[in-house]
Amino acid sequence: EPEVTQTPSHQVTQMGQEVILRCVPISNHLYFYWYRQILGQKVEFLVSFYNNEISEKSEIFDDQFSVERPDGSNFTLKIRSTKLEDSAMYFCASSEGAWTEAFFGQGTRLTVV
Amino acid sequence: ILNVEQSPQSLHVQEGDSTNFTCSFPSSNFYALHWYRWETAKSPEALFVMTLNGDEKKKGRISATLNTKEGYSYLYIKGSQPEDSATYLCAPRKNTGNQFYFGTGTSLTVIP
Image (cartoon, rainbow over the protein chains, first blue to last red):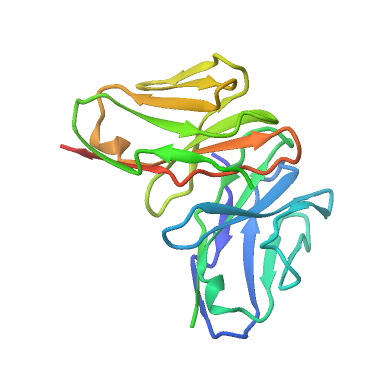
């Protein structure tokens, strides 16, 4: 069964460093998303991406964050100059259409120290 | 921002018991409601997508109903089994934009 895969599963980084979280969406899906969950809090929307551009982003997704689809298969989230409060589980998701169900990856746990 | 509430926050039931939990959300600009099942260390798994007022969906022992006018959805599990232990998330979507707005989830533990 097709699935969304994310790497790495866990990343520890020093405050101020840049990190890149990687995702391989399901191959025929056209819409891609990043969500995050800070421990003990709700899953929060970060950004959605379609046709090689951001279609929607939340107020969390500021200039510190960027997304890219560098080739036909990967979808990345870059966090520049990480802060302690960026520590969270980051989930990638993809969907076939704008309004169809989204399939989620297993997440990358980011720990900023 | 969409205020999505799920209750109860956590639930412990005995194997064989039936249970239900609630998701409430603002009814304005509603487009669809998704239910996800999320086991520890796994990806959230899509259970149902519902769009119409009065919708009822069923998958095995799990079913869900939707009331878009008053802004709530119920998820029912009949004859709970230990493998049903997971966090159940609801995620409404508005008719503007396509993001999911997740609730805090209901954590279900089924005791053998």
